[in-house]
Image (cartoon, rainbow over all chains, first blue to last red; front, side, top):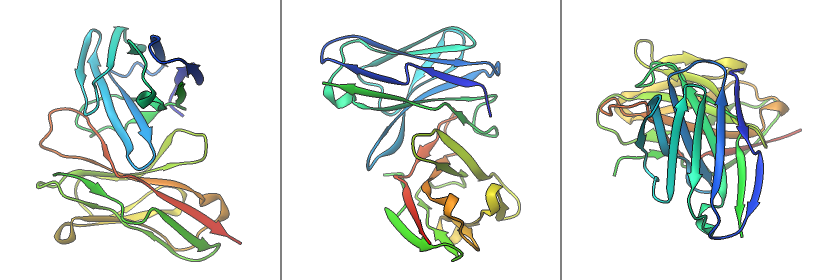
Length: 114
Length: 115
């Protein structure tokens, strides 16, 4: 299994509070991704990174920001959490773009916003 | 709109029976195609992928999938299902016209296996 960890694994927070989720990899892969998984929607891309300090938006980026100051860490921040951001969040990594390389997924973070 | 469709939300099969999970896409060019499996409480694991070449692709755990360009389909099959195959299955597509490594997922098919 690819070395991907996510923290925390579970979190309950209140509307309006900031939340940061961390993805850590030990594979030295260049590309990292944040997805959210919701019933009836499958997984949707929030943001991705193609190198240190290089990030771009995915299809559902509103209300989220990301940072990548080191190859191994990719942070997802909800500046002011809303109930609509209750979801399961998955981090993924890959060595190369355009998916000639497989994406490997972390175990997920379950977030509940009350 | 471009999309990935898994028309079956939930499928129930008997252990030992054959399985086919459907996936259709609407992207114009030939995309890259994937099937992932997610066991309860777990992340996603790649079963198989298609980029080019032989349209019948073999994967892990005895799964295979066939790319049919004329039908824009990439259906997943297994000849004999085991109880441990109970999980959720996601078809995913990377449109080759995109400039980044984005996966667009279908909404998933939950597989229940009965004894």
